[in-house]
Length: 105
Image 1 (cartoon, rainbow, N blue to C red):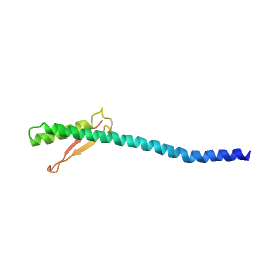
Image 2: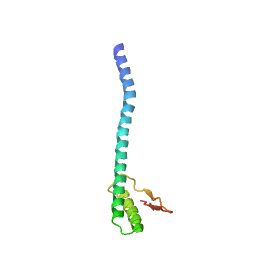
Image 3: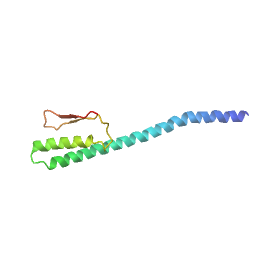
Image 4: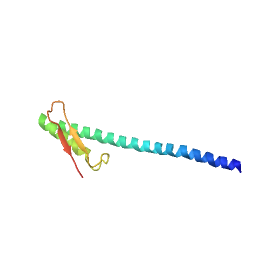
């Protein structure tokens, strides 16, 4: 009988140590997935900004088109990597005033 009680105590200790470790592992996997999605969204936004700016005729139009293309890609609902209440601040080295865009749901 004493041997069975020892096994129960051992199983409890294993559960106390194992369950939080397993939950931490699952949460780390979820966080890594969200980081990968956000990175992909930012890369897609940069590619869209470069594409939009490259087909513009003037430098001012290129800045405006690039910023609006990047912002449109970031807040696109099909991306689902960023929450709907995203705030983007796009700034180049030569701009005195940043282009600030906000979307509220």
